[in-house]
Amino acid sequence: MWRKKTTEEKYARELFEIIQKISSDKKLLKDFFIDLLTPHEYQEIIKRWQIVKQLTKGIPQRKIAKNLKVGIATITRGSRELSDKDGGFNKVLKG
Image 1 (spheres, one colour):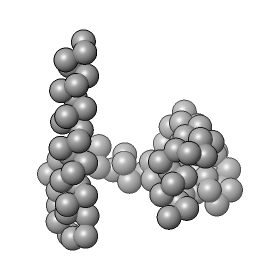
Image 2 (image 1 turned 180 degrees about the horizontal axis):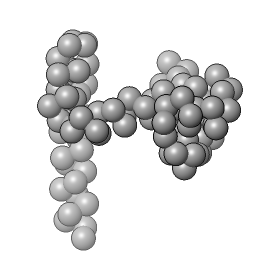
Image 3 (image 1 turned 180 degrees about the vertical axis):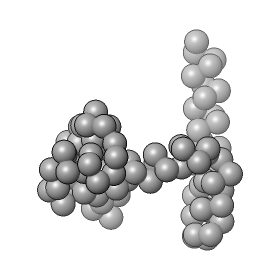
Image 4 (image 1 turned 45 degrees about the horizontal axis):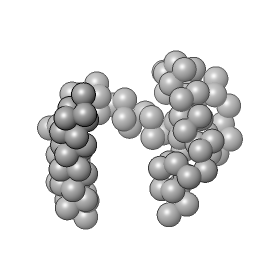
């Protein structure tokens, strides 16, 4: 188990490094994600970010669910992550 986690962490580091490396080229970054993810995964990531943005604007969860055609559980997860003031979403939104 320890070895598997270490390998996964190594792979994650590699992925984050490549994303950081190409982040200034918006077209390349988009192309990379389109190639990396299935169309469904790509759309889900886009929706999840919109959920976070709409939650920070105070839009009710049920309205977000209707507008984005997602379940309340997905929105609740985003809301829970936003409640972590030291979490990644809040760091990005403050930046």
